[in-house]
Length: 392
Ligand SMILES: Nc1ncnc2c1ncn2[C@@H]1O[C@H](COP(=O)(O)OP(=O)(O)O)[C@@H](O)[C@H]1O
Ligand SMILES: [Mg+2]
Image (cartoon, rainbow, N blue to C red; front, side):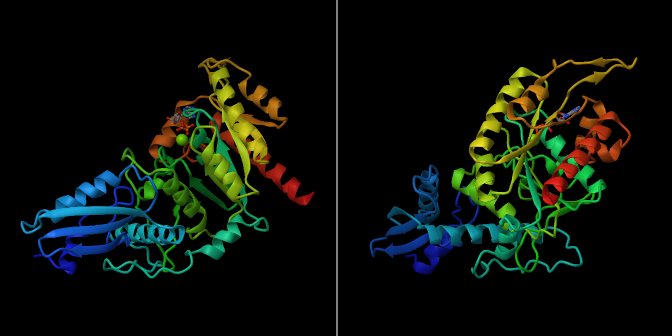
């Protein structure tokens, strides 16, 4: 007959379907009762109420325990963690994920290797909390700018990457958070593939690529891999991109927001009250319509919109004439609606897409292209606008 230790050992093979870690490791197993007749009852605390995946945990517990022929029955009782317990579980999951992934990566010499072994790290205050407050506090000098579009595919991530590099070329220290958790793309755009590494304080070390500090979901999962996290887990991840990252001192932190008009942008606005917003649109009416709504959310959250960028504005034909293939006026009308400047118009150019696909934003790969010039002018405008604001 199985004893307590053996039951726990078997349960180590049951993974939380979202956190991808053992339910034992995550302290989700609260009680194990073994009847002399071979019936086993297990109490498990889920991280979130109404977890749609509880069925999976129950099935997996049954599966691993019933492998032993002496087990006659398995009863799984589910409860829900309180806020504090959940926080600890998430911290553990997060720290473990970083450690496990860090072990498979080559270490850079100035970084303490993540300690080996599968024991969870001790849980104290959120690692990097002071730094986080620094980044989030109104007093902190880093200018946080969310890049939003409403509609996907208008070039928000492309704009984020190129603006980051352009601001860097103007002498600023720049970081990027790829907040598009489901559709992350900054790793590809910057040519960064390495999985996450952590420092001795268990903070994520940002990718340092093309002079930019960058964090993205791509540090944790492969592109194209489905991410099944629900709201609370997503929220936690987002928060950690601000709080648990070893951010160096930055002048600008650009946040590539997911498409859509809602929650994430609002969440960023609420967490970082000083965060500003740039709206990206194409000249098409449908794109501006959705961007309007994204802008409305920002206004309601009392977030400052610093301007509009119109992307894929025109194509320059071989003979030099300009063609507005997606119509015209979208950026201008959007800027007018919010009474903010149209910061610039980026042409549709093959080199822009190519730069993004090849891991070198166009501002680097084709610095003399029309689009690169447009990005630099926009960066300059943003910088002047912000410097002026700071001075006044
Ligand atoms: N100005 C441009 N010229 C050519 N291709 C572009 C331009 N802007 C974006 N793209 C391409 O369009 C696609 C969508 O851009 P992306 O930045 O991923 O959009 P979003 O982040 O808004 O979904 C990408 O393949 C990108 O390379
Ligand atoms: Mg994108």
